[in-house]
Structures are given as C-alpha cells and as structure tokens.
Image (cartoon, rainbow, N blue to C red):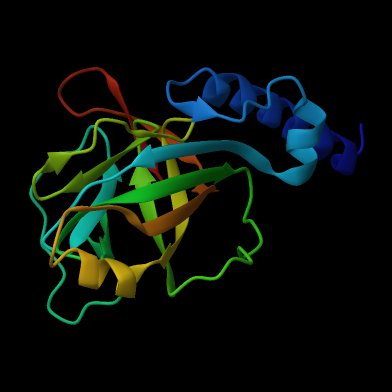
Length: 206
C-alpha cells in the first residue's frame, strides 16, 4: 500500500472514531454521525452550544480534571492569556452570562468570517478529553467535549459584544450580550508513560 493511501485510510478511521465519541456526548448539537465522509472532508467534527459565567471580567479554560491553583494574568492582559495550563479569556463586563459556541475540528480550521471585536490563540494540554469552563464563582455546569483524551489542543477564540456588555453589566446581569466562538483542533500526540510509584499509566503530551 502506498504512503498516501495509508494516510487516507488512517484519516478516515480517525474521523469515524471522533464522530462516534463526540456525537454521543451530552449537550452536543448538530450530530454528524450519519455523514462520516462529509465530516472528514470538511474537518468539522462537532459543535456545542452552552452558557458560560463571567465574574470579575474573566473566564478560563482548563482540563476538566485539573483544579490546581494557577497564576492569573496581570492588568492589561490581552483578550487571550495563558497562565500555566489555563487559558484566560478577558471579558468586557464584570458579571454576566455570555453565549459560548464551540467547534471541534480534526485539523486547523479556516479563520471564521464573522464580525468579531477581538481574537486570540493558545495551546493547552487536555489529558481528560474535556475542557472545564471556569470563572471565579466556580465551574460552568457543562464541559466542552473534545472527543479524545490525552491530546494537546490549539484553541482559537473570538468575541463580540464587549462594548455592549460593558455598559449593560453596570445596570444588570446581562445574558448573551457578549458572544464567544472557540475553535479547537489537535496539535499533539500522546506518549504513554509509567506513572512513578503506582504501576499505572499517565498520558504525557508531546
């Protein structure tokens, strides 16, 4: 079998596996399970819609199983800021509920053509395959389902409504005045290592 044909078969099998895992997750919309060939061709694996919470002008993304303390971005940080394994998103409003749209891709997607006020990118390790969305008041009810554990992912974040929510949040707890789009795609492959002292295994993403 030639190398190109082998790569095509591997890609098709990888896409089928992702479709089955992700479309079965809670809170997922737009299931693509009935059209695997179309998913592989487009590269879009899943979409997810959820509400997030913002307290003190920020929310952040981290592996759903990682609740350790981290440093925080300093004053004047950019829209997307990385501290340890957390990816912080700086909001325009103090306390409110933005709308969060999530896309999971099997490769780097094109830049979204919508009208956005800010955009940024970051990388993050997600050993569990799920991303928790946090703010200072605690985690959101739903987690982002990436569909595959033990991977390193790249995320591209967009936001609109920052100026609108800045004004509304001074008067009320605004709902969906600010809107985010997150595009995730895998960029690293796991290497399974023996966990020291336990005989178990952990995934170390390279």
